[in-house]
Image 1 (cartoon, rainbow, N blue to C red):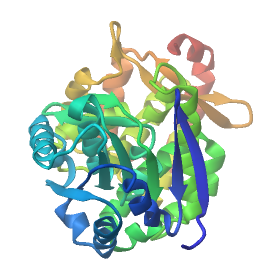
Image 2: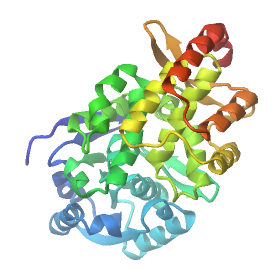
Image 3: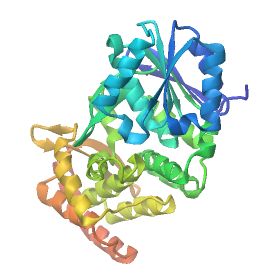
Image 4: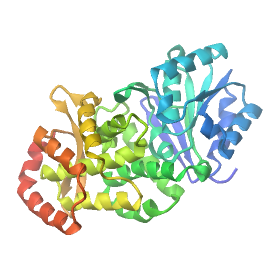
Length: 389
């Protein structure tokens, strides 16, 4: 087996598991699965038809007690309560017990759905994530947030159920459609936006056709560190929702099919930075820097007006809302021309309404954006603390 780029020890409360990132990571799946009485491979037809998918299935057939290959509908269509029931019935008929293992082979939708299936079947069985998309490798497969969707709300029914291992092998990305690669870059952009130094460091990679495994490992380690500090999202883990509040609204407005998760997050990032600029928390230069990177990665920063308005309505169902309304994850300027990111930020309805209108409008020129940003930042620095937690 070729040398791995990195093995990252992950910890959630009392539970520990490895996140393996690099060439050959998935070769361990058979040995890990063989420790259980039965194994169910949960995937989708598109992934199972790829060379990587065939290799993982063949390895499980040779090296583990594979009892079931359960096929989910592609994408978000596999994340429903109906599919959860269908999967649970399939596990039961295959003789799966509390000593059995679920192997999730696929992108973020598959790991979300299969992880939640494992979390709920017989009150919880073990599972392993083998992500096959960039989005899954840097985010969805790590941290144990498993869920399915409701028709109007993303990930509205779920559980914290960390895996036994995450095996992220970049070989799985070789046959990934270009749009899925770009979608994954939406989550990479989130990590970069959390740390402005990464926005610069990741710049050339975001514009490239493929990503260096070290970038994948950097994002994975960032998520592991945040999750260890806050396993159930009571505090700092909320930072990982940067771009997701409006982004999830965009996904729902597109019926979970018009926009991929990463595309929606990209729009959400642009929205978050524009909202922060409107509140005087950052200058418009920060929003411009983020949107330039989004454009270089081939990701959207705006949506049609009707989509933006629908996304605003659907944000009312967001999991992060409180008694006083939505709480945002937004940047705030710090010394040195950079920014930090804070969670549980309040934003008045007028600022949100104006930003919704702005995100649906043509992009302003870079010069006018910077001029407006300098004036807004000077006017709003003293108000930034009032807008935060």
